[in-house]
Image 1 (cartoon, rainbow, N blue to C red):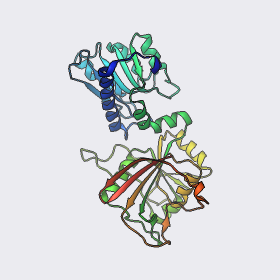
Image 2: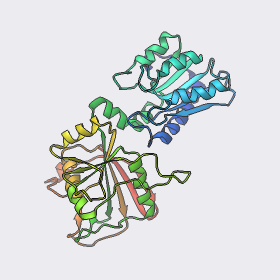
Image 3: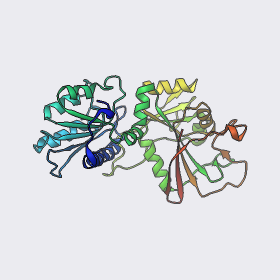
Image 4: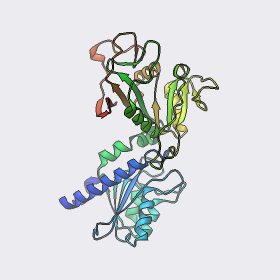
Length: 348
């Protein structure tokens, strides 16, 4: 059913749908670092009659329950699934993968109504989940909080539509636009809060990529160094990738070494199930990805510091716009203070 064809619910019904979908979006965010290459999805089951008790779920790591099944299991255990409404950020799957179809579980549970954020772009689904639910007599409403869900799932949507990962360029820089001193030193431009946020960004990425020159100069490990709430290490580490060659003893090892056209590099990463790749430099790599128009998001951490000259290393190393009429302009997504530093995110 198209959103334009759906019945009007009235202010109260619309507000209820928006509220529960907003909660589903929050739950999906919690699953973001652990689900790839599967999408990070949140789900909420609201019993018939609106008792006030809801049942929640989010996507488990690959091979585990999808968000809908997780929320349903809690509702079924409480005897509250029959006639209930299920909210899910992404269209329920209708095919056998690592797990059975979510649509089968929804029908079997006696759910009366399903509210969906966006249609799944995966060729295995792409509307078939909605069709299966409607064929079973379940009312389906789509497009609730569509913009917010599409933004949250943008890396997944791009990967499914193009086969390439979502590309995020992350750089730490001084306020006068330098990522390193003339001698190449860059530790540390930003403070602890900004560095912790950068590790969270790594944790949400499936691969981290740098150039061979950065490996030789900085010898980065490119691992996620964050503790979980229980004090353990993160559940997974991103794939480490280098453009060029890395010495066998480099801390980035084991890593995959990639060469050639950057589009082909992204195709290779996408074929490995990389939904989001974090490009961390150096300046030449940043320039080449930017110049090729391959960056989806720019995340810059700006420190209140100045190198105070023109001999420090810039964010981009290579020719730029020749005139102001040729300047690249993006869309400002967010600005956030982290300790003494500022995090700026820009969309292409």
